[in-house]
Image (tube, rainbow, N blue to C red; front, top):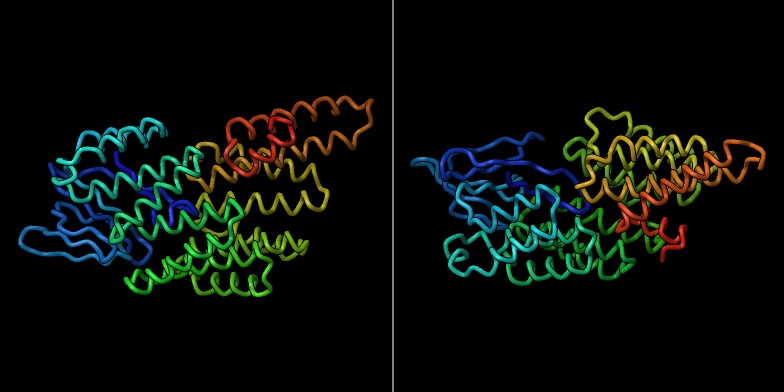
Length: 373
């Protein structure tokens, strides 16, 4: 199995498991009108930021880059195959090793023109999913510098922006989102890429406390609408979080509940909204309600933590769930038998966040709380 993350992988979103069709033939997965369809029995001759060109019998097919979700090559070097198997098994250390072997084989790189940029992309993804942000940044930068025409460059720029924003480096993050916006316009990547670049810029504005940040987020959510529901949901989540920060809990609650009840909500959107609703309860001192709400996220989403955004959500839910339990414990009299039970529950959840999700924001906060730093 070979998996390629959808556009804007680290900020989000979906993973596509794909397999080769036929003996040595290529497959192009194309998104049209919100649906992803396979174009099979192809021979791909071009795969770059401009788009994908392929032969099917005597016909030549052209796929705009904005519509291409993934390309699956029927013939792959053994090292790359091994890397993808390890990647699919979440064995990221082994994946990095095998992708490195693929990159070091000069003969294979001549035979397979796509090999170098694909191997770099999945190396970066492996580092990011393993929580090694510094190595991920280094790899994505190498991809952008050495393979400027790669179809993965927009994804890499988005990941670089998100990683720098997560580290509090707003100026660097904005530079990457601005570069993404420039490329989206120059190479006609479509409205999705443009909106994602705008969303990155708006998130930077939120971190900097700019007055126009809220209006920008609301405009992005409106523009994305039903054409790009995943982008609309992501922007709406940011609007809800903005209201939580400003302690406008009523507005935040409306947004999160709307996302939770939306038909076809992605796991990422659902996890973010569920945590958002729990944050509203937590910030208002409703710790018992919050503990229950956070439990929905870490109990239902733990099988999907390969997605960095969901891993972040689960880590946060475990930390805040543990904190909620601890705060409930503190409010009980010493004679109450539940005091010991809540203490044990809170500590267990904190330990889960600190150990299993140590590279997330929730994990980092849990480590501080437990004195592990």
